[in-house]
Length: 352
Length: 163
Image 1 (cartoon, one colour):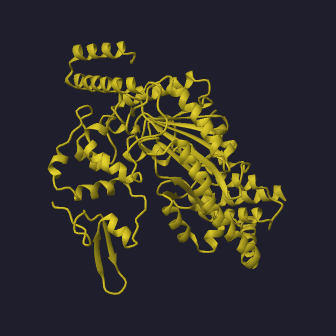
Image 2 (spheres, chains in turn orange, red):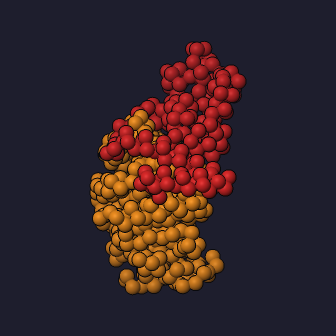
Image 3 (tube, each protein chain N blue to C red):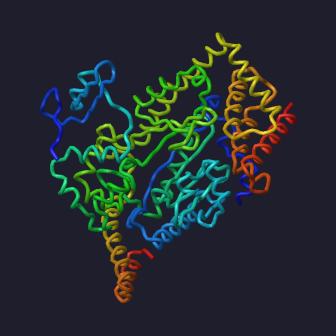
């Protein structure tokens, strides 16, 4: 699949189908792995990076279940296309902007992506809509097994899987969920929730991971501990303690809005509708914040004529790179604002 | 540099530093245990560089640390300190003295892996050391323009099933 083909649809993780998808937009698990016998990337020469890239690509090709529908050589990929991959959560911003041989292999529906030569030789991720950590883990575990039958991973009897950064050592696992928390934000309880999250040893990040803003009230919650617990224990704890805890806060805040602050809630929702239906130029940031209130309105039954998938997809399609790809040309920020507003108005008139 | 002792027990190293800004400004330096007894808990995930700097601050013999270098990839402890990422799998053994306490601190006190294990883990580890050394020698040989030596190492790699 080419980047252009990829851009026409949204990945499975935005389908709005999985359990609890009104609050848990998506679930993600990734494993960090390095190939035994090679230095980590900070000490690898360019020829070693090439060798690692080639080795992993052929290994993926030889597996029955590897992500084979698309491979992108990042060095060969134009800037705008790299940005598309970032917006689709298939690669990190660091991977897009780094130097040297590197790539990403992506499966159909974008449920699996393998980043090659990011911070570690391999970063294997599984991404699903809603709260589906078990399904994500099952898929990832099988792929990890299939790869490990062909290549030796760097492994230590005491420290487990060895990673370039010692804080990922052991299982090399990061379990995360992207949560939509507009009601917590509206009721000004974010600080309280984040403090509770930190007490549970989890990190809270913005929409695009490390060092990014929580645009559109989306927050990525992820585990920090990678050693001393099995992968299953880490996932179970995350799924049965951490996520339900935060989801419960959001539910309570939503109930409070519906029952006691109805006017405030409806005002936010209908202002969003009004602006989205009428604006003639709108920035990404404003769009995401308006879509956030719209999404909350749909999930709380304040609006009924727009489906959640349309809104989820707009969150992706209104990002700068996707917008430019769809228009077929590079645009200034001002031009993007106008086109963005046009697209949204069209979407709404089709929906009504 | 000498380590700062806990103001309360005067025995353990102070790792918790509190500045009280309410009323008169007060500074408190406590060990983790005493801080816990005083109701002060620190659970925020700390980035690797901060952990590393704190560890170094509390060492009396820093010279010994700065002299550490991995014989396999050539990464020195000073470089690790600057970059925050390691150079090769063998660094976990070469810098074990620093990494063990650091990892345990970053991992809620855990010191051992209990998750998945590769099928042939012991073979893998031995092979890993051999391959790392050969690849490093190969780079050196290429740099020295000693192509005869480089060719020999390539043959050895090939024999081990690596291109």
